[in-house]
Image 1 (cartoon, rainbow, N blue to C red):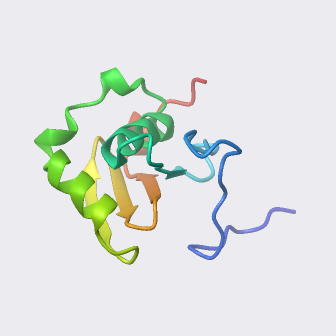
Image 2: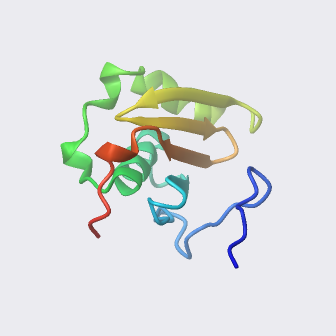
Length: 116
């Protein structure tokens, strides 16, 4: 018997704060990640998108072509924990929050790879 995942009420985090939690792309094309003081929010977003889509970070388009990376880092690091920024990037929807969380949802499952 399978249980339907509940939306936004429970987050799964990897043991290491700097490692994105990779989910089965067929069932739940979402990766959640926590950025830390040692990694910029933009770097964490790129790593989470790479994990969600099964690609290497170097295979992704430039993040700065979609958002101003410097402004994004500044808003998330220096803003209120309630700051939330959402945008589309590399066939995903990214939700980055001032509390240190990043959630990436694959919007084009056909482009996501299940290779690990």
